[in-house]
Image (tube, rainbow, N blue to C red):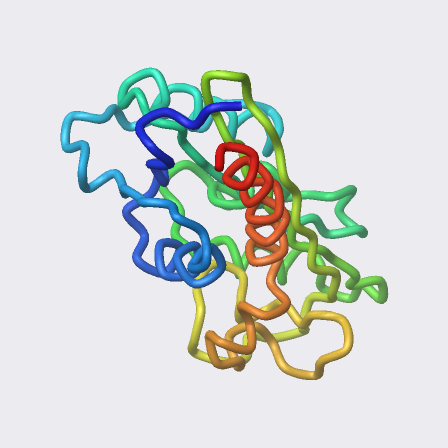
Length: 203
C-alpha cells in the first residue's frame, strides 16, 4: 500500500488536545501530520450518520477527496447500559441541537436518577481514508457514571465518567493519566500499529 505524498496524513480536527495526543503516540514514525488549519477552505462535515463508524468515515473520506492526502477522523460516543447504549452516536447533541456539555451531563444524571446499574463505556472509532480504501480502529474504555459531577479537567462527560479500576472521574485525572487508558488513546494505538506496518512495507 502506498501513502500519498510521502506519509503526509491529515487529521480532521483543529482540537489541540487531539493533535498533541496523536503526535505523542505516532512520534516514532516518519509521518508529517497536517491539521485542518492547513486547509482553510476545507468544508465543515455534518455528522449526520447513525453510527460512530459512519460519522468517522464521512469526515475522513470527504477530507481525503478535498486535500488529496490520507486522512484520519474520529467519532466518540458514551454508551450507558441502563439507557440501551444511549446517548451513543448522539452524545454531543444529547440534550438538543443547541445544547452544551453541561446540558448533556444534566440530562444524563436526570435519566439515571435512582438507577442502580450505572455501567457505561466510552467508545471511539477512527477512520483512516486513503487511496486503497477506508479502515477502522476502535478503542473502548469501560466504567460507570458517577452520581454527581466531580473534577474540573477534561471536557464533555469527563466529570461523570469513572473508568473501571479507578475511583476518580476522567475530570479528576491529569491529562497524562487519562491518556494512558482513554478510549481515544486505545484507538490511536491500534492505528499506530497498523500504520507502522505500512511504513515498514514501503521501506
